[in-house]
Image (cartoon, rainbow, N blue to C red; front, side):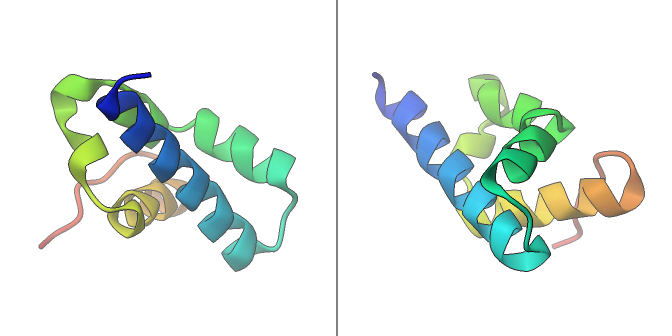
Length: 76
């Protein structure tokens, strides 16, 4: 496993944990929601560099996508 793949896996684990903590669902529900998101697709695409961001930032993008029904760039 490459360093990039490990970073992506760590972020995925964190986002799923954050989601379970905030929404109180099961691990299966959290995984299904995240794996079917545009944020997950962007995270998997190493050319976006999203995997270099912190887990909390990726989770914020994910929750924003859930709230807006689409991926929205967060303002800095």
